[in-house]
Image: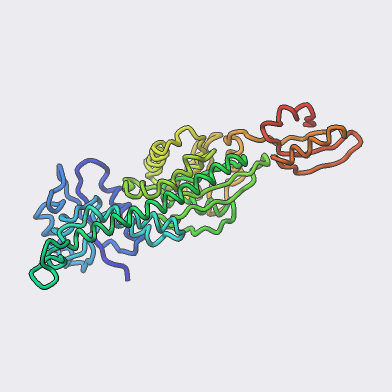
Amino acid sequence: MPEKAILISVDTGEYDCDVSLDELSELAKTAGAEETARVIQKREAYEAASVVGEGKLAEIAELCEKFGATLLIFDCELTASQIRNIEDATNVRVIDRTMLILDIFAGRAVSAEGKLQVELAQLRYRLPRLMGIGASLSRLGGGIGTRGPGETQLETDRRHIRRRIDKLSEELRDLEKRRSYARTRRKKDSVQVGAIVGYTNAGKSTLLNQLTGAGVLAEDKLFATLDPTARSIELPDGRSLLIIDTVGLIRRLPHHLIEAFKSTLEEAASADIILHVCDASDSEAAEKAEVTLKTLSELGAAEIPVVTVLNKCDKISENLPVDDKTVKISALKNEGIPELLQAISQNLPQTSRRMKLLLPYDKAGLSAQIRQNGKIFSEEYTESGIVIDALVEPALIKRMSEFSAD
């Protein structure tokens, strides 16, 4: 049975409270909780002790009894003392938006790197909140073996968590180095990379499955995919492109997560082209697209060519404008995929070119040079020479143009 939860937000005018709570409700549903009520209080600033005012806290306690709620989810980050004060007043477990997202991530991490990233984010979040544990957990006391300066349980926990954070950070740095080596190797081998980015639940994994048959989990839930997947596809012009699916983005993504998942998100920053997937049927599509583009800019990916992919167009009746950098598709129904591949070909920086060549027999050795760093699709021996259909690397394009048979 899903846990019954009450969603709580303080409207200070900083952001659209209703939209943020709708998103929090989806996050709660993804985590396995059922929204039974939501509470919004308008205030100029958060109450230092309990986020909401004393009267509103009493009202929340009554709602918990009325609906049998076992969980309160706040749409902001809480301090340890705020969590303790609210739990004391309501006798109900309290979590905040960050804890909820971390819980979802913990359940979705599959790869070793994903699990490391989630644990690191959880520990970094937990460390400053290790306070007020109480005398019962302290090793200081008046009994035998507990006298003297000693060390409180809080200090032990803090030391243990710091040690664990250092170890996880080191392991992630090693993984990041390997990822960096892989990126360098791809550049050296002239492998072009496309990153699929976008708001969570926009249909990125479904698109990857349609393009590559990757078989990635695709659900109508937030953060259905956490670990990046890479697959190769062939474009209409004969070039190969390595497509990488990245973790979904969300409004006010906690900085703990951005730090922990930086190495994964950096795949987008090092890509040759970005496929920005938007849910065209979402009334908040424009705002969510802005969140994605802002995050890409923060990662240093603002100069990379972007193809905007308007997904879920089968759910809308209006005619959306498109151009050479914007494509309408339905990844679920496999509609608009040829047009998308054509747009990728047009916008992907030219590194290699597909050429039809007629090589004289005394220049037959050139075919070996083409094959070394390019790709030969067909080779036919005729009276006039060798007719070759090939993907020619940039360094040879100028030299091969004199043998063009196009």
